[in-house]
Length: 281
Image 1 (cartoon, rainbow, N blue to C red):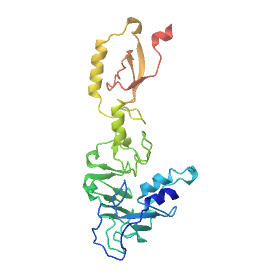
Image 2 (cartoon, rainbow, N blue to C red):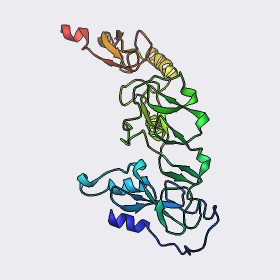
Image 3 (cartoon, rainbow, N blue to C red):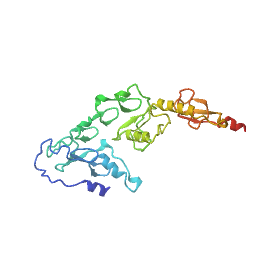
Image 4 (cartoon, helix red, strand yellow):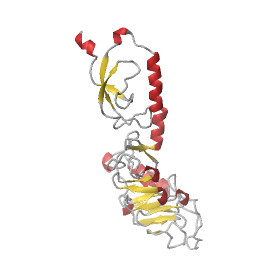
């Protein structure tokens, strides 16, 4: 980590004795994660990084797994102004040159960001800052996370749904900077991971195997395909199936293209018994 952090600290050609305008250098400093005019000193390892994500990337790349760790944002006590390089206690305005180190500043999360177009806000229930505008989100007490207003009373609640890893990329969801997507079943994954699954024609939740979206049009196409493709007589037997969508069991005529649930009409089913005729032979 020593070499990683050293490469992040480049001396600025500035005169620390000259007071700066509050808006000096806005959006000109920062890292791939945030535009901000300060760096942070990580109390866990006493090294300096542009942000906690830069710290976590370096700390979790250490060769010794026992030394890997994440930075707790609330524990940050010292920041370094990127304009005059003065180290100081956490505050929005530099005590030496007067530069605002972040147009958005949260003194709970010790978070700075110059890109206010993200519409950052602090959620007291989550305990961290979110983006997207406070009026556009609400905190679901059952799920323990902030969801868009469109999901209010319109999603399946799962306790602490986002306090788990994304089932595709395994990144922890709760404080991820990537947008999350709540599926019909209530489970959550990154929006980008959801898109990748759809592109790969994978439509079932990796956790519970329920359909991730409305599949009714696909089921109608399967109905037509099955009607058009009659099975040979030796395959005319029933199989018992379990529906992943409604969790009910039923029987269906065997077909190579799929088995339709007798209760909800879904083809998201699995066989739970051998063919009856085959058992009799």
